[in-house]
Length: 87
Image (cartoon, rainbow, N blue to C red):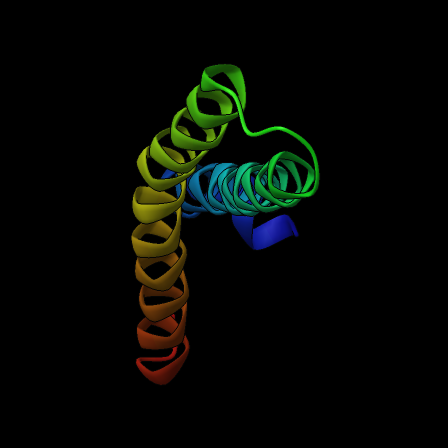
């Protein structure tokens, strides 16, 4: 951890990696919520409210999850490249 504290680039990369993990958790949580609400809606009377919640969760999950996955891969690739170069 001392190498991260002394290097501003690695510190920023670590912060982005933490945000990417949080974004993945939130995105997947929104997808699970959409799935559960859809199942409940299908088991009961499927109303416009259920439909709106499902669509909203899917859209929000996609908006959050896509960049989180990309930034997660990018930070891991940058760390791997630094290790390979001996930095």
